[in-house]
Image 1 (cartoon, rainbow, N blue to C red):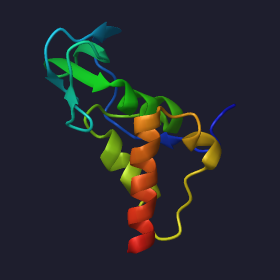
Image 2: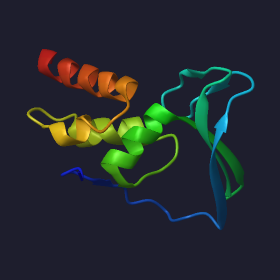
Image 3: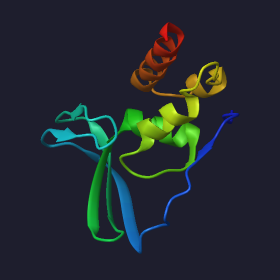
Length: 120
């Protein structure tokens, strides 16, 4: 099933090099997208790349889920801001087929976002 919405961020371009892999945390890390703790034993995406300078990004699999389902392109550390920009206006609809493909924690966070929109 493919999501009926995609977010395509106009950014300055790709780095000259980047490598990504899924790792298991041996110590606590912080997700560069949502700032939650990635605990020892938990898997996360590790990205090393050279953009303007060498950078390392660590992304929990829940934020990676949001990125994979909703984004065609993105900027590291900006996924949730860009998601809110896309679906933050009054009456915006987050497609159910997209929500159903998320990890449970990512699904809960998107649903929380939707409920906050209803309260406004």
